[in-house]
Length: 74
Image (tube, rainbow, N blue to C red; front, side, top):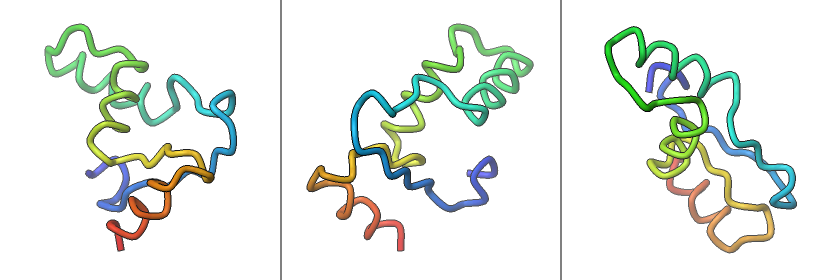
């Protein structure tokens, strides 16, 4: 949570084409994990983990879950 100051990130993607496979955040986390001895934790895997754990809300704006997930973070 230190990477996002304890607050989930909420993106406003409208299409799947807009959703990245990795970001500066996932790249930074990946490098830190590798320095700590982790393996198989590239930026794409870390980004998927951030999505799966709710650190990043990448539900499309038109998806019914986007608003629901955003409300949970408040």
